[in-house]
Image (cartoon, rainbow, N blue to C red; front, side, top):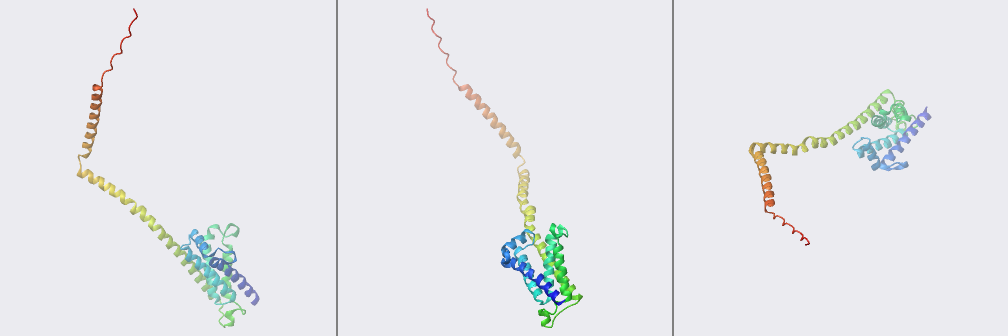
Length: 237
């Protein structure tokens, strides 16, 4: 049992350290914080830099603490939080199976972290060396509850940011864009009230202009000189 828990802690915790440092520093073939933040933005996890940084710290610190058997319930909660967020934002829509992009792997890691929180890290751990090893069902429930709270915080932060991003667009479509239209309508109404005879005058002006143009054409035609008759060719006698 001592060896089994040690192997489980080192395996799960070690891989989480790898994933966290990939996000934060680009280690182990990772992309680093800037590129990871862009990916998080693309998945709707905004602000991307904050979300990516929080996920990287939770994975790296939680994984290291779990591998060492230090503050095991808190380490388990950090890992559970990240996995719940991954399920909620990425895998849930794909169903359970991993080959279809589902959440089965995340669920296994959550179960492993909760089990270690309940059983305790074992004798080969920093908690045991300090004499502060915690075990029992209440610690498993604690880790699950705290992890769920962390995932909920990430979710609500994302939703709040999404609403904030949508607000300017809504204001533009409902307010700013409609102001010029409203001004045009008001100006047209005022014109109708203050200049009731403008339309008839305009129509009469157009008619007068047409009549003047027609008279001008007639005058030009009348003043044009008539062409002189061509001389008749002389007939030979």
